[in-house]
Length: 406
Image (cartoon, rainbow, N blue to C red; front, side):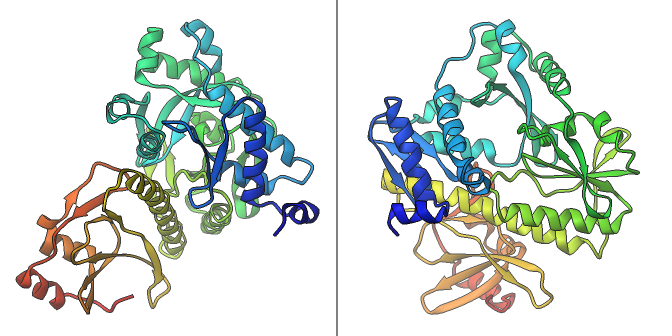
């Protein structure tokens, strides 16, 4: 469709966004940019190239009104420019801008992968260590330097340069978060679900302020942080609220790419604790988890495919395909083909293809019978490299445990 027609209709497209961002960046002195639609990114022709990923900003662009879209583009361009600026030389200058950030499994691995794609050397990638600590389950708490135009993750080396310990910097960052305006703050949704709506990119970080959650007066609060900008709270015994929490999360996840975690957790006296949803609600959370994991693998695969193509590496990064079991539950599957070096994602079922014979095997059975062929890779979400294929004895054992191919 011609661009003038798209502008007339007002329909937001990522191609239109790429055109606007490229024009704005080049107006600020950037070299010429090319748009890779498959990767959703703009690249310069330099060596190494500068890469501008548009997937996240496109979700903001789509949700904005037509009148607001130029501001979305301008904020993104300013953020990219600010991210290339140097950090303050002193901790005293940086301290007012420190903020705590909560991130999910695999985000740091993906950042290192993207750095490699941008031309960083293996040693540069290996020596970058974000300033972060485990928080709960798959979540970590880290530190960021926040300005009106950009949020930059801090590294352990940066804290060392400033001469400040992680715990001291985190305490200052929490004080900064606590000092932020509390409006509009908590908004009540249906069925006793509360949504934190501060509109400042730190909704999920407020799980680090348990007093803020206790103020709601919710008995046995259960929290879900499906997105960086989403914090949901309801009671552990409120089945309708839990179901609504899952529904709202699924709706949001279908529209926005900045996923965080779909693992519910209960706020107890000693901090965060695991929470097992009631049996009748559990399928809704299982659905969330399956979709989230498949999307994480898809993002990882896209980056791996691009890196392998650039470096001439003949490796197939397996895809995750979601199916439905007869009872409606999601089933994640991938494929392992004889003669193809594959990086297998961990799924419920693996479909093995040997010439014209195809069988499907549960992951546990596959790992038991062919585990020595599956070398774990150092990445999240986890993958396993397979260069060989089960021999005749292992194949016969796998056939004996095979299930219907999805």
